[in-house]
Image 1 (cartoon, rainbow, N blue to C red):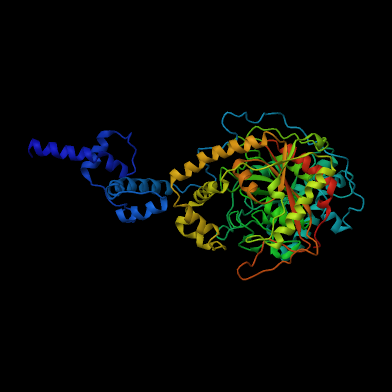
Image 2: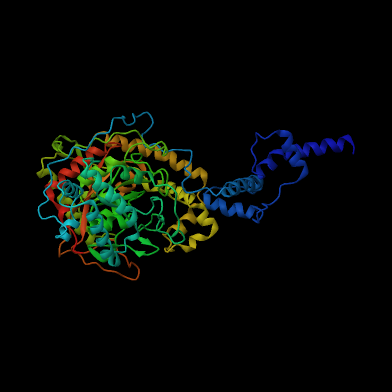
Length: 607
């Protein structure tokens, strides 16, 4: 071979150097000689896993999805690079990443330049007077079923009932109510009996682990419990199990709480439809309980557990708590470790209690918050709740436009107007309590535009479900269900995902500035605030706010809407108390005072 031919061949090989390395999915830091050898041996090939070669026509179609314009020359230039990107993605896919493997990027909701939470030693919740327990006994089963955690604790310490008796009582109540409400996935009866017996021995010996000692509770079935299935509510996962308890389960074990059941959740934390059916609202059993903490809210509402644990990404504590007329506490992002719990959206998932009172929520949160050394999102923030504080000293705002009663027009229903009037009465009650209210509005920001973040992270959390085709096993297969949403999110570009995260930084600052002027902000439980606070991490306390009257619009199902969100006469409504990041205790204090003033939490459904 002549020297000219050799030179031309070497030049050609060098020109293809980066093209081949990119198409192979290799990094540019690989030893250059090895890359040159690879380039000389083989031209860029279609993917060897059976995927077709990438063509200019494919790029043209993808460009429309990405909303970018390309020339013909630019499209041709991209082909080898796109092949390399696909090959790299396939190599990662072949690692079969487990749901519990978190990204290296850890979301911090504190805006840049703003001080983070101040670490402080844990201390007990400052609670109010000893609760009345007259008339509460095993003989008065229905009254006992709806007792608060504090009341149950008082009965245990007065030796009016044992933990074993409580566990047996609530397990029987669960079995009685489940056929109508469909909230039970797995009874943890053997575990519960052992825990309850241990609690009785310790209490008898004077060893008191605190206010949750001996109290039966239920877990949303995305929390691992060794020796029992953890189904995530999803068909195809019915027999899934893990060899270690979730961190929250461990912490509740430590304080002596008694786990009696794993409760339903919408499949993979969406809605109230799971592989065993649709969990129902105890106030209207024709209606779903909402989700995704469907079973947790329904079981608490029906008096079947002393308390429950739920999770929220975008309304999954708030919505079922509202629907079922119970109290929910969605903590600040990074308050409670999610280790051992199913991941949906790493930068939005939060774990919190669902109970019959704000006081109970505070006691449960106090037992489960704080770093565990595993979940890197958890902050060393304090939760020093004082339920005896003078709430008149708090700076309280209210979302004015959210409380305005709308005029019936296109898109507004009579039900919307009815509920808005109920919500507006909240402000009068707060003023009766001596609370000064200042109107405020959410920042003018397109929060919903950031929900691509949720879609992308959720699709990544269940990547293999989509790529394997096992998503067809899930019960829900409508356009709004996860299978379709996961598939759709795969076409969001990485660039657009990062742009959404950059825009989120602006949202964090705007929300921080709003809360800097208030200790607590009161709002109806739905609306834009739900999206804004879940994206930006602020805590929320959701409390019952009365029942719709006999004059309320009827509950009506249609073929197009077989599961309406509006419950009709005799069903609950709620109100929400928000606070700034890691100021959960302030929202808890005002919500507790409001609850004591109104007594709405004392009303329960007939089961």
